[in-house]
Each structure stands twice: as C-alpha cells, then as structure tokens.
Image (tube, rainbow, N blue to C red; front, side, top):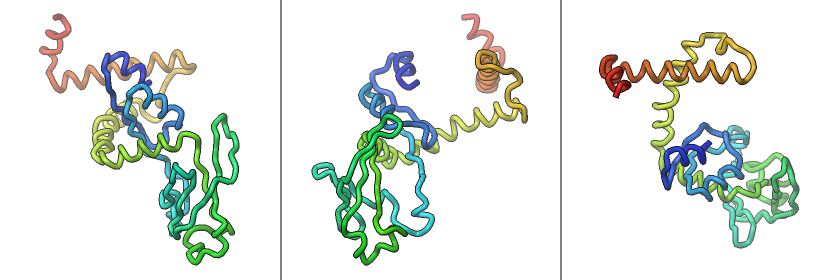
Length: 199
C-alpha cells in the first residue's frame, strides 16, 4: 500500500504511519529499500514488564558478535536457528543464567531464552525513528481516528449491510466518498465546493 501511495503521489521520499503491530519485518525492509520511512510501533507481546521482570528491550543486541547483552552484563549467544512461517528465527540464551543473582527479575525458567527474527535490525531502526518522533502517533490519531469513528457511527451496529468482498468494497467506497464530501462542505461550504467541482 505504501509503495502504491508513493507511485500515486510521484514523490521521492514518503513517511507512513500505521497502528501497532500491522507489519512484518519483510514489509518494513521492502519499504526501506523503496525509500519509504515507516512508523509502526512494535507489538507489545511480552508479559515480562507487566510482571515486573526485564523485557526484551532491556537486552542490547551486538551485531558484530551476534549476541545480546543482558541487564546483568552476561552475553546470550545464538544457539540455533529455525524457520517459522517462512522467516528465519534465531534463538539466544546465556550459560550464566542459572547462577545469575538477578535471574528472578528476568525469568521464571532456568534460562532466559530470546528470539530475534531475520529482519529485527530493520524493525529496531524503525523503532528508533518512532522514538525520535513522539508527535507522529498523536498526528495519526487526530487525522485517522476521527474518520473511522464517524464512519462507524454512521454505519451503526451492523457496520456493513452487504455481503461478499466486491459488494462490501463498493459500500465502503460510497461511505468514504460521502465522508469526504461532507468534510469538504464543512470546511469550504457548499457553494465554493460546487464552483470548484465545475472548474
């Protein structure tokens, strides 16, 4: 979608924002290669922080040695790799875990096992961009949430009245066109809009 938008706008650089978790590392890599800056927060899938333990973000990856430095200063090295859903997943842990004095703040198991996907470096670069632009999330909420909130309100509890993808696509297109026209009428007024449409 981002690549289609870039082509439509005929722009050299593009920055895209999306909701948390709606991405894969491979998609972010393709966007990066196409000079598209992505801003999609990483999903929060770990219960460690909620339980008062160290989160994966507390482990620093050192690409030169392909290892993770834990909060206690020990190193989790790569133990094996596997393919899951067509993506390489690398597993790391440290031999120092059983004797670690702060293990209870890290894991309830004997070892703290960490996974990194093949495109994790790309996702980490994206996260650094997000951390440097905290206003991006607010901007997205201001521009997008109002639109979807209004559309949901219009559509009521049933949401869409039609069935099958082509019919639903048509119904949504009409809803979005109606929303856009009503917004332009509110901003410009009816007569200026009619004049602009005739020009």
